Image (cartoon, rainbow, N blue to C red):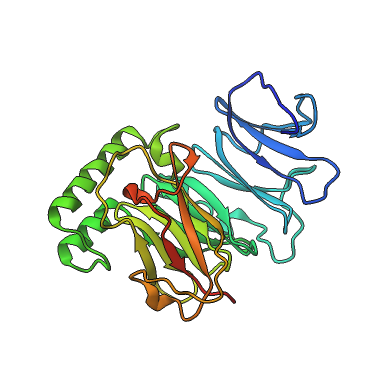
Length: 308
């Protein structure tokens, strides 16, 4: 611990917004009751260095920073997404090839679909970022420089029902288990989709190669390939587990790479390996990291990914 900062307001989210090795550690903190973002010195006494009250018009619940472009992407409760540089004049960073007019981007996607982002995660090289949205449950992949959507995965309950009934799902459950999960998900939609709800922790992450996106769904933790044109499900975990509760999962984390020279996994989706390096997926329960995957899988499952 390097410091303790006390605020006269209730913080909603925070993020470090400085480049590695910077002389001053800048921390951006949003307010649960206003659209203001305050910038603090992480080693300071708790007095804000700057107050940004014109970037958003609603409370900001997501802040994500890329050091490669020295740029922050933030999202608010009204569905607006903004780019800004964490230094005066707090506008768009001077990055070659970066969009100049927001109307030429797809950043209004959330507002148009009456949804909000529940997570924003940059790819390892920061060329793309992935979001999850509520209540649509869509997973969107954006190009960072153009702000354009490059891919969308529909993980809505309606899509899950149609694929289950039509037999077109890559992985299917028996009708009774599917019905139990569907009822639990609908209960979450009704009670846990608002601020502070369990669904607000839903996120999507990248593997270290940037070729795969991993995120939780009603059927389990899914790994989607971002390498080919068109959707390619590389693995799904937890699909045969029963639901122990409805509040104990949603966000996913990639742990360190396992020290194995070649994949020797006996997982069902071993055909995606081709001699690759493996990584493990770790989910969180109740805000604490644990070795439990979605729907109570009491072990670390292995997702095989390419190493470029």
